[in-house]
Structure formats: structure tokens, C-alpha cells
Image (cartoon, rainbow, N blue to C red):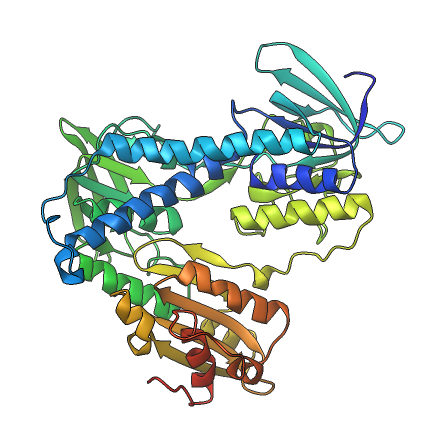
Length: 473
């Protein structure tokens, strides 16, 4: 490969990297992709989004089975959980999609390398050189006109701890041999509340600890309050504003000690402890020190086109400072970069048009500004809120808790944010993203026809509620 000069080399085979590579190839560019894992897909496919959602789907079915008689289905009053089969199905979902990525690499004529890629410095005569330590121990040199760094992130751990079979991150918890009977989750972001929801459905005693004043702290405050209410209703213990967290190994698992919001020290034992305290960008050891790129807290800073301070080098995905660490953010960034390199039409990513989804029970979907953020920015805020109890499809689904909240600008009717907690929230948020992307007004969305009966028509009532004209409440 020493004599081959690629148009683009992508370092990292997660959602950001493989999407960038495929789109660049679709534009007719000659692409190489380097990934250190034995399978493509990155954290999202192998140890994150996809396997977690597979478990959440099983948990949802399990919850329905608990009330099967209510739906007129008899004879399933004593279902048994086969954890080995649950995990096997999760692994099957992963395998199908990793094979799918292998097919897409071949289809798009992308040359793949299994190994660790490292930058060697600035381009020489317009060509960058990447050193690759291959999985078989051999060395390879790859040359390309443009470089895209998409190395992803690793789970953060509390200082002084190393993950094992008791103290877990999202990686270890997806390999456990049995579902735990008790679980303490440290951190209440998406990872923490999703796993807490999963194992509560499977019958575990679940406790969630959060250092900030509310759970899912990036969400609108009313969404946080509603999730807390519904978690407590499900029997999940939640404590916020905690500090001084300590973990000790015990014979049966681990003991967690913390100081609660009143200053009182508390402790609890559980079979497993999940550390869900965020993700750290994977930027060490990739040769940044040989370039003009100066990371900030290990994140790479870019401009709106994902260009770094090193000419010809782009960064996308979890490693980019100031962007949410979400698979779909990285995927769109990859498509933007591919178009930019190919000289095709593209639009930079708008931070407030990126949806956030949390796949708990109940689900959360949000986009745009929260009510508090909109007020901080000086908008004359007008809010509409529609409860799912007024939506007939939600009642059919036996999921009528939660609401849709619309944050708008009173002067022009601009939709500033939409926040949903309830059934199919992670699906129906797409309409709100589209509305904000196309700069629709509340009035325009009020006169957009929604099919009935659907959960999605709750958005119609929510937009109308901004003007006090919701039909079903």
C-alpha cells in the first residue's frame, strides 16, 4: 500500500467513521478505513446503543407479560427469564449488523485495515502519512490526501477504580453471566437510567445515584421531574445531589457509601455496581503531538465543517469538543465531512437541531432549547404541554403517563424546543427535529395533519396547546 494514495483515510470504524467512509466512496473517492476492533461498528454497535436497545426491547416484552391477563392473554402468568438466551439474541443482533458493515465496505470498494492508526505529522506535498500497527503485529503505511479522525470514546471510571466483574462500565455489564438481583448505578445520564430501567424490569433492586440536583440533567427540568416520578412509581430508588461516593468490595458484591443531599452518610450493598459517569475521548496515542492539533481536556476542537487546526485533518464523533457524544451526531458529521472533501453540497451541523434520545421506560426524546435555556437567551417564551393521557393510542398501549412539551418564541411562533417523555418518544421526536430544521412555526404545525389514532398526533395537540387550543385535553 506504500505507493497507493487514497483520497481519504478514516481512522476509526464506529458510526462516525464508517458513515464518513461510505458517503465518501459514494461520491467516487478512494477510501481507506482503519479500525482497531476485530469487528467494525465501534462502541455503538458492539458495546453501546445497539446491544443496550436489544436488552431494552426484551425488557419491554417482559413488562407486558407481567400484565398479559389484562390484554386477554392467559397462561403466561409465570414466565421464566432465560438470561443466556437474552444475551444470545443481543449478540445475534450485533453480528447481523457487523456482517452488514463488512458487506458495505466491499460494496463501496473501501479498503479496510484492522489495527491502530497514528498520525505522523503535517502533509508533505499534499499527502498525509498514517502509520498502522496491524492486528497481526505487522506495520503498514497509508497515504492519503485527507485524514478523518473518528477514534471514539471510552467509558469514564471513578478515580481509583478499575472495572471488573463487580464494578462495571457499559462494556462489562453487557457480558455478565446472570441478571443481577441488585444493582447500584452511579450516574443518571442515558447509560445509567437505561440500564437501571432494564434491570428493574427484570426484577432487580435498583438504586440510581446522581451528583447533580436532578436525573437526566441535560433534559428539560419538567422531563427530569416526570422521569423521577415514574421511576419511583416503578420502585427504583433515586438519590440526587450526592457526593463523596466510595465503593468497597464485599463477599456478595460491593458496598457503596455516599453523602446525601442533607449531609447524611448513607450506604447500600448490591451484587453489581455500574459506573455511568460519562465518556472520555480516545485521543491519546494517535500522534496528535506531531500535528498542530492541541486537544482541550483530550477533546479535539474543530470549526463548523469539522476541520481541525491541522490542514487536511478532520475530526468527527465523540472526540469533538462541544458536540454531544451521540452516534447520530457523529454519523451526520461524517456525511458533512465526506461532502466537504468531495466538493459537494453540505450544511454544517446546528447544535440545537440534534435530537437526544433516552430509551428508558418511559422513553425520552428532545430537541432544541429547554424552557430554561430559551429564557436565558432572552426569548419571550411561550410553552405548550399536552399529556399522553389525552392520546387514545397511548391508552391502547397502556402507556398514558408523560407529556409532550413545546417551547416557542411568543413573538414569531418559532419552535425553539420540543421535549417528550412517554410512549415512542424516541421515534416521534423526528417530527419535531424536522419542524425545527425547516424553521416551521407553531401555527404551521397546528395545521399539519396527523393520522389518528397514533402516538404521533400528540404533537399536533402539543403545538396547538401553545395557543391554548389543544383538542384532547
